[in-house]
Structures are given as structure tokens and as C-alpha cells.
Amino acid sequence: MSGLDDLLAESNERWQWAMKRADGVEDVCLGRAVRSYYLRYFPVGFLALLVLGIGGGILLFGTTAADWANYLSVGLLLSTLGAFVGGLIYNAKKVAPSVRLNTLDVLFRLAESERKNITAQITGKAPLEREHLPVVRAAGVQRLKGLATQLIIMPAYPLMFASQTLNWAGRDEMFVWIGVVASGVGIIGIALLFRDFRRTARFLEATAKG
Image 1 (cartoon, one colour):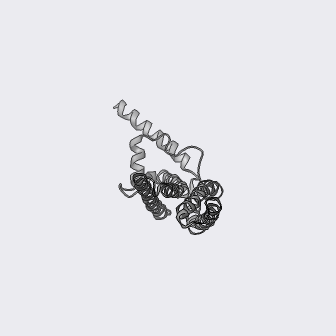
Image 2 (tube, helix red, strand yellow):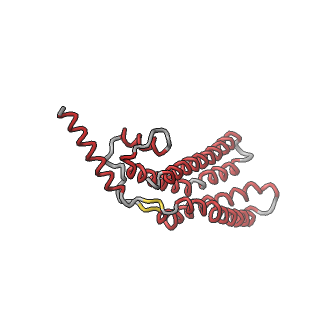
Image 3 (cartoon, one colour):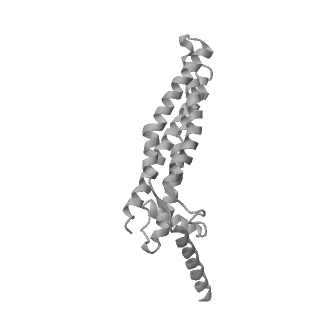
């Protein structure tokens, strides 16, 4: 029995460590930060940079109707850069302060099977273990923060692919289709991130009272 006792002791030690790291981990207003970005900052910045890029494209390429793909490409390229840089700044200034995290990952010392089980609890695929609820909730907050960061950065990718697609228009049909598919995959990826973000946020809301 000593081997089993040693395994149980190690497991208890890991969970005790995780419980200590879970203390103070809290979502303050990540949902509000993500909503503000998508409803205010991103659309305003995107439209402003798109118009600025189109204006710059007209100055660069002239004003013939055949060059509109080039104008849009420049506008989308500028919007892509804005989404990358602006997203990084917004993540640092607005998203990061919207959550309280500890320096170390709360799941750092847990076994892989224990980590997978916690993820399954957060996503509703496994029953909730009340004795480990503080750790599971802290892991949920960490997951929510990671998803929020991805949601802030992700819009730059379909914009980048759309810009490249316009560059290829009329030159290489195969690359145009590749660009269209890549843009579509990026948009689908954003939708899936939103789904996971809402699911994790609902889990935290449902378990807020313990």
C-alpha cells in the first residue's frame, strides 16, 4: 500500500500547491473589455485606416476604375497593421488589467490527466468537483484571459489574407482561392473563439457563489 499512499500524497501535495496559487485569481471585467473592442475600437479603427489606405492607394496608383482592387488592398493592409499593433496595445492597456492572475500558472504542477479533467469541467464535459472548485475556477479565469487575448489579435489575420487576395486578383486564380479560404478560416476561428469565451464566462458565472 505504500506505493498507493505515495501517489495519493503526491496528488494531495499538487492540489494544495494549486489551491494556494488559485487564491486571488479573478475575472474583473474581461467580457466588457472584449465587447468594447469589437463594438467600438476595432470597427472605428478599421474604417478609419481603410479609408486612409484607400486614399493613399489613389495617390499611389491613380484614379482609374481598374485600380480599385489595389486601393482596397492598400486599405486592408493598413487595417491589418492597425489591428496587430492596436490589438497588442489594447491587450496590454485594457485586457490585462481586466483580470487578476498570479505569476505562475495555477495548473503548473498538476498532472496532464488532472489538467484535462479541469478543462472538461470548465467546458461542461465532466462533472464539477466541488472540492477543487477554487482551482477549477482559477483555471477558468486563465482560460478566459487567453481567449480574450486571442480574440483581440485574431481579426488581423483575415484582414491580411483579404489584402493578399486582392493583390492576386486577376493574376493567379489559385492563390485567390487560397486567400479566400484562408480568410474564411480566420473568420470561423474568431467565431469559435467567441463560442469558447462565452462558454467559459458562463461557467465562471454559474460557479461564482461556489
